[in-house]
Amino acid sequence: MSAPVTIRRLHAGDGPAVTAWDAFVLACPQATFFHRAGWQRLVGEIFGHRCFFLYAEREGRIEGVLPLAQVKSMLFGHALVSLPFGVYGGVAAETEAAADALEDEAQRIAKELGADHLELRHVRPRHSDWPRQDLYVTFRKEILPEEEANMLAIPRKQRAMVRKGIKNGLQSHIDADAGRFFALYADNVHRHGTPAMPRRYFEALLREFGRDCEVLTVTDAQGTPLSSVVSFYFRDEVLPYYAGDAEAARELAANDFKYWELMRLACARGLKVFDYGRSKQGTGSYAFKKNWGFEPTPLTYEYCLYKRDTVPQNNPSNAKYQLLIKTWRRMPLAWANWLGPFIVRNLG
Image (cartoon, rainbow, N blue to C red; front, side, top):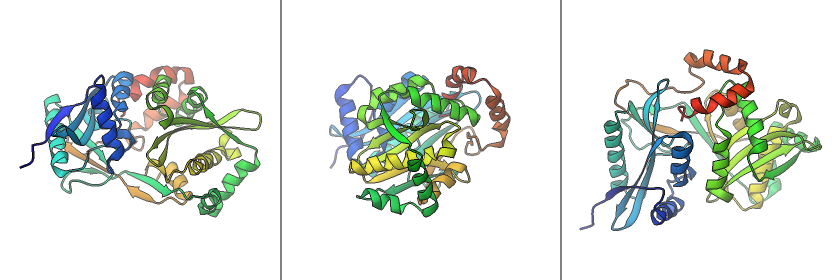
């Protein structure tokens, strides 16, 4: 008779447990970059959210993990989420017993905290009877072994935009810090009417994940920054995650060039998958990724509802937030950058 599964909490200062957690995540097919142990420090220290990083153990060996954080907001409600600020999350387990035990503990914690709901950002469905969020899709595509094959795999009109950026003499650079990225990112999100993450968050990402987190910035021939992206690397995948651009970027095709350069460099490194990340259906980013020849795959965000009747819609597409978006656009950028971190921590 096999030993029972035991649920334990990961503590950031427990070196051997953190090492074992990350080794499991690297090997588990269901795990993603957002299951890495480092997110506990980032979400806890930068945003002040209480974290519950759970792992299922049997006879001293990890069989599953579930990173969770409590998000309390007067505007958006009270939730236990896996994982705030991540497009993927939920249970990653190699046995059903471990997965069930982790979810049972998550529900127990959510109820004990008095949360309105539990949100698990699974890539694939686990529960046919749980309420789901059907707003988001992800875009993933194979990186071919040869650079020219990747170029030719881009649909003709989009390929022309990449070549336009090359013809304009644009250049890409791997930055050592988040300075140029943050200036472009903060200006970009302000134009769209949404608050920016704090600069210290991006600096913390670079420290926490080292070579697995990278900033690529595109400049014109004179060295003026036009577009920048923070990307995550996990196993044989690259995930461009946070991006920003100047208003001049569109005319010069700097965004198109940026993602081509990221793909080209990933190919040179021998990576196999380009993960374009999450987009909301019907948005400009959704259409942009489709133009690259990527096909959408629905994301399965599953919920347990305790104090609400419907799945939350805490996103800019929600009509009730349009006034806030318009007001934010009119706010001076310096004010927005100061106030943004106090708001964005509640978005998750």
